[in-house]
Length: 309
Image (cartoon, rainbow, N blue to C red):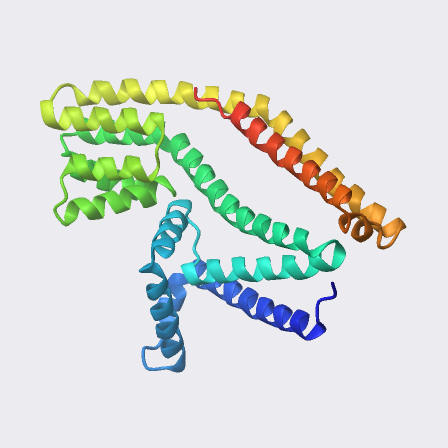
């Protein structure tokens, strides 16, 4: 099955356009302050941004758009929903065309599904990394809150001070909590929202301590200092476990990459061998079985190495 060259050219042009849009969107996120100063509301750029904003708002109103927007916000990815979905669709189209020309077209569809999974896996990886960074800042956060409350400040003011003193991501998340407190949200609800955005056992313990102390009173300073010491010990334990388990993860990925490279070498030494193999039922079964075993190994190793300490 030969794919028409005009279709390939169209897909490449659309992909290039979406890639340029994605790079521009990332640049807009990184240089947001500079753009806000330089942007003119009456210029053509203002009209273009307004149209893009309207399109992004329309996508966010859908169920998929809301879910993607929430995950992008939690992961700290500075990219609009439309750009993310557009890049994902373009990547799927490129996978269908390229893999469909290399091996049987049915594997092009499988590759497109894999591209979609990789996009969301990237977002999930950023979510986990951001959560790990936040957990690493929890001992310092507990100490800042302890010092602020020891000085006689209320919890609202202590959270604002911590938001100013701590770096991202803790500073960003606490700033959102402080903004929620300014508009009248109760302290316990704002802290629970924080725990829902970045769910972890360590943050859950800290939030529970703050909520109970805010309701029933007690020695909050002593409790926060004890939690800070405990969180510091847990952070060291997590680092040791992650270092020990990292070897298995790297080995598994290395085997998968070498397998793909081996297939490429086979096709390079014997042009058309993979396509000839994938056009027959036995070859399709073998390739599908190999891909299934590799993905299963990734999932199993991920489950084994995910240890709650």
